Image 1 (cartoon, rainbow, N blue to C red):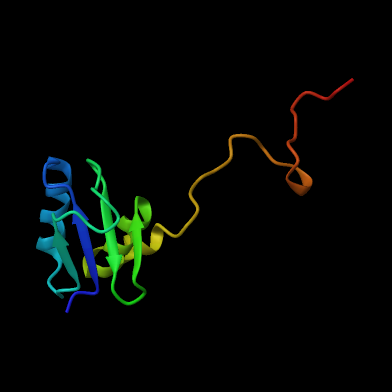
Image 2: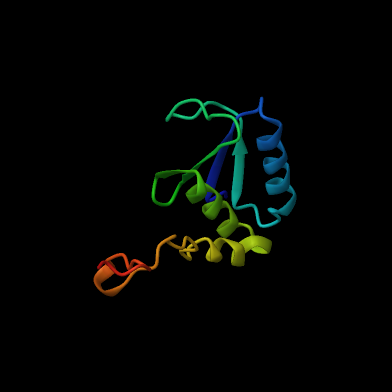
Length: 106
């Protein structure tokens, strides 16, 4: 039995390619894909919506991709990597998160 259901827009070639990849690598049978319109509304182009049966929650965006990767054995480690905060702030933060300016105020 599938643990998650992936909804995609059948008119989008990118989404269809992702679903083809999911079906190819899901040899365990944990992911079910559907092009029907889900309860939350129509899925936009180049997006996926994931419904998890266990928690009865919806996921979209990077959270949906993370759920998909965690249910595909070959991509499990990539799904774990998506939990890491890879965003780095552009400014250097000083003590207590206050911006540190390179030029001293005179």
